Image 1 (tube, rainbow, N blue to C red):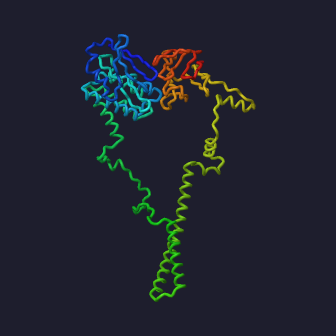
Image 2: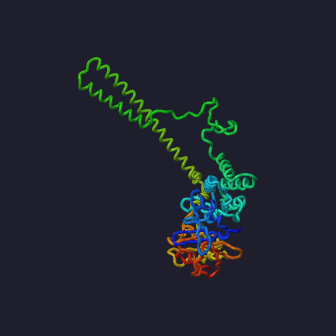
Image 3: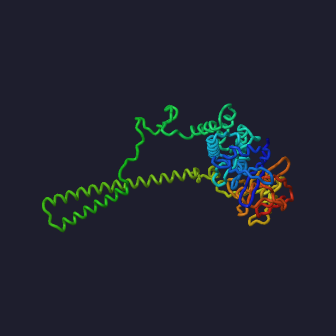
Length: 448
């Protein structure tokens, strides 16, 4: 039995509606549906059975959610997003197992798995009756196509899923554990276990700075810093001055006289030593900071030292690096115009594809339809073209190609998508052609 779905949206809620007219009354009152309806299994879409116009319908609430395919059509799934998805799936499968249910009712398809736009949480569609379903191996192929192919970690996870899903007798929870365990063994050492290293291979100590006698480079000695030594020098000078003042203004006994002389000698000697060493260290610190700054300047512009040489290629490189960038349609046209001292009109690039031009927005938008599919919305990182407008949803609509035609589909937006004044149904692909007016939220576009 093939399961038919349709997307429905009212003012505040969005639903996926699945028909179950061919399901027997016994199944409609069965254990699977009751467990799915009570919402005890985490990571499943909320579902309720409704009878409308003599039809038995399952309503899956998908408010503030988009399908997995819509979410990652613009930017593929990275490694962290894949791992989060697999953890959500594992939690869902554990919940099913707790209530003695298998994964047979889970619809593994990128259009039947939904992602919360705000939290990134994944929820799965569970159909508690017998129906046409894709195998998990087919789903992993879809997931591989949806993966960010610039992320090596994500590709590794996706390929592992594909390979393990083809093994006979492996259960889905076990498969997910295997994939996550393989990834963790590379990135995260197990707590309490020392990693195994081959000292000859893993650690390559560099002794180039050692001298011939095997002595290591002298480390900076620990002790007082230069400024602290200077402060102590002034303190000892103050002590010496205070005792000298006492000797000149008071009559001291023989013992006090000897003690005062000793304290003065010690204070003067220690003060002088602190003064000289402090000045010496201060000079060293100044030289060291100057050297570090000089090295940093060299790192920032490694060709600085060649500026005195007019023929140096480094000087030419630096000059070209600092030169402002000018974008022109044709270098030869600009050169000819410069030679003739005339202004040349730059022809607009013609890609041969249709383009959307806005006409009632505060800022003019031009959206070429030459590299499809293109998703439009206001949430950066989720869509290909960002339009910051309050009437446009976070993930609003998508332009794609069906055969030789370009089609537009609304992705369950709040204010809708219109073609020539007619509102599009959610998830319905409508062909468009040159001369059509496409309204996205409040912004009207002409297709030329």
